[in-house]
Amino acid sequence: MTNAGPPLPLVSAPWLLANLSTVIPVDTRWYLDGRVGLEAFRAGHIPGAVHLDVDRHLASPRGAGRPGRHPLPDPQRFASDLASAGISPGSTLVLYDDEGGAIAARLWWLLRYLRHPARALLLDGGIQAWQAANGPLSRGDSTRPPVQDFPALSPDPSLVLDREQVRQRSEAGVGVLLDARALPRYRGDVEPIDPRAGHIPGARSAPFSGNLREPKGVFLDPDALRQRYEQLGVSEGSDVVVYCGSGVTACHALLALELIGVRGRLYEGSWSDWSSDPGLPARTGDDP
Image (tube, rainbow, N blue to C red; front, top):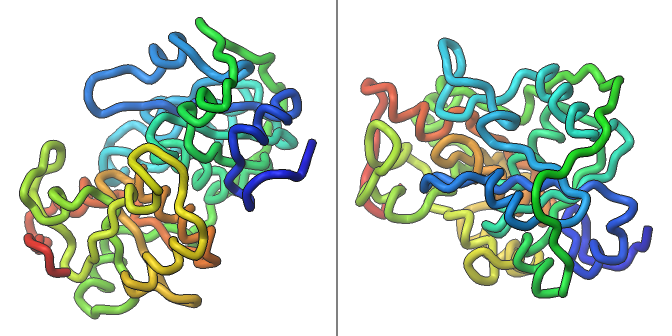
């Protein structure tokens, strides 16, 4: 494996071309608009890739005691799903999607949160960057031999907050709370999915798309990311919590923070959890 490429956990398409035989690409394409990620995968994916779905693999089913639209997956089911996909504890994974990493970052973060020993890298620019680098595509289904043994995983509770913890922080005005949804949803102009419009009082608007040089493109360089988050009140040592609609795209912001040396935490249920409780306040407009 060569060492050329951007700082980890990001890798470039040319890096992946040079190292494809030594890694497992993981396609995480998933959509809210009715398209099916597995169908996109079958229509064309990076050779050797496996597909993992947000609803089936990267979240638990909704239910009592499971907050929001995408509760965190059960650790052992997650480990089993990865083993069934041919991913072993010693695998090096290159995660990708077609949304600038917005979905792939959820898997990157889950591997860290659940302390899975596989090495997780993210393809900067996703499948579009792969195609722009003349990377070939395979079609149809793709499988790898399942792994028979998989690790017992244990979550890192220090990386997650629940609704009550976020409520206390919001009321006390402590730390930095970032909302990674698009600005119209933060403002409350629209709310196409969750029970109420608006944002958590005290949260600052930080759309995940602002981490990218262009829509669905590559990440900003670390200096530009650092400047962006400094403007949002984040500095080295800041206590940062991030949420989005359901805890998926917030992981994109957590990865961006990682690139500048800041370890943030996720509000698991995110706005889908907060807005489901009519007793909690919701603020609209541009102000936190």
